[in-house]
Structure formats: structure tokens, C-alpha cells
Image 1 (cartoon, rainbow, N blue to C red):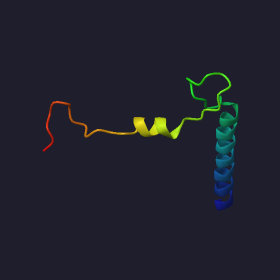
Image 2 (spheres, rainbow, N blue to C red; image 1 turned 180 degrees about the horizontal axis):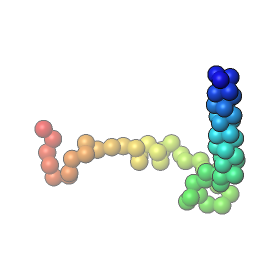
Image 3 (cartoon, rainbow, N blue to C red; image 1 turned 90 degrees about the vertical axis):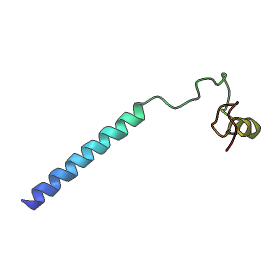
Image 4 (cartoon, helix red, strand yellow; image 1 turned 60 degrees about the horizontal axis):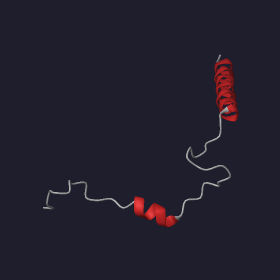
Length: 65
């Protein structure tokens, strides 16, 4: 009885794994949507540095405490 249960679980896991991997193989690749044709997707670090700067989250007119 335990052998049958272990085999059933292994078969179910194998089917699930085959299903998930099969879906990943036929899924479209990830690409940046706004990249011009022929672009390699490279983004300069200067551009990332400027956009990553965060403020305190407070509105402009409100003073810091």
C-alpha cells in the first residue's frame, strides 16, 4: 500500500513538473517593451542612478521634522 502511494505521488509530481516545464518552453521570451529594434537592452548606470534617487516621501511644501 505504501509503495503504491509513493509511486502515485512520484507520478503526479513528474506530471506536474512536465506540465510546468512545457508551459515555460512555449512561453514568449521576456523583452523590454520600449527597446528599439536591434537594441541589447543595455541601460547606462548614470540613468539608473538618477531615477533611483528617492526623496523623503513628503510633499514639497511640508517641512521635515
